[in-house]
Length: 261
Image (cartoon, rainbow, N blue to C red; front, side, top):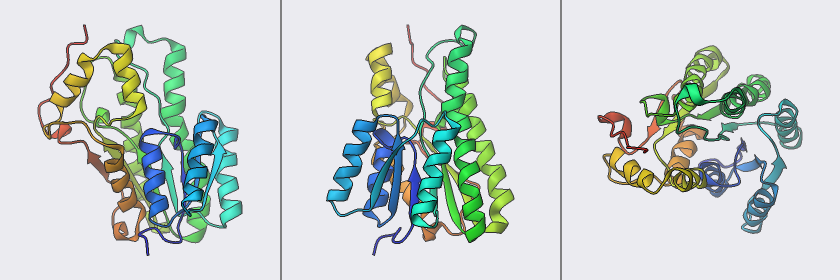
């Protein structure tokens, strides 16, 4: 029997990267999944592949910056499954690599909508069901960037820091309802989002990332997925209000700051 056998999980941003790995890992542990993204072709294909492998998975289009899309995602999952055990607020975008005073209002609002307001919405629509059933695990994907600074990423760090603060607050507030709320702060992970940053900013960035991590490499999405599976499982029944750093030691050491010129 899998670690998540019989549990129902919703995961945002699951078409690729960390969300993809979390979905694959949770499906393998027996969870029934409702996965979402804006890349519908990739998301549908991924869900289809998981179903062919014998897993119970449904893909639902969801732009996490849309309140209507988020409400539909959670309502559909709860209506069809009759419960909700795990909510993974994973979807995010990377806008940065330049000083905060050069960021436009449009860029700021877009980043906050996807990286922070989406977490509010995911929790807003998940909590009533979890409170009613007196159980649930909310997992918010934060970032090592919320712990340590790096030139050019003030807005991204601000959003992820807020995610961690919200996580702690909700853990305290909803602990009496047996709802656990935790976050995960990945270091640099080998994802399409980070590959795009290397394409935009230069190959030297990938070399700098390796130097930042005492373990001597960047991480794998599957390594973050293992942390999420633990937090979703009954093994973490006494774990709430934490930020689990899956960062190869990045935040434990003086940070190497790359030359982005």
